Length: 120
Image 1 (cartoon, one colour):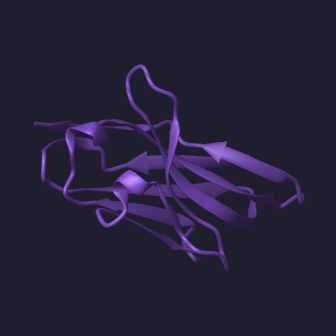
Image 2: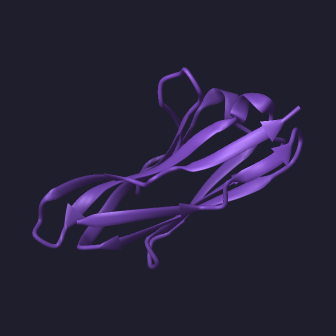
């Protein structure tokens, strides 16, 4: 199994910044995609940013220029730097990874989520 643990959420005023972190552990052979999703109250979970090795980074249009995703392949960690936060960025942020475990089985794992609240 592959476990993900997120950290870094909190409450911030509009215009402020937060940095989310995600650490993957367990039976990992290779991590391919790493991504951040968010789920606002009453809305569906949506992709915020995604990194795939050898491919470009994808950002949701509403966060382009404000959010930056990064990963450390050696440590199996991923961060999301969020600047110029807006109230509409409020939600539960989830870390997601896809790859192969040591038994060469595909995995698609989710973290428990971390709350981000942006006050106006």
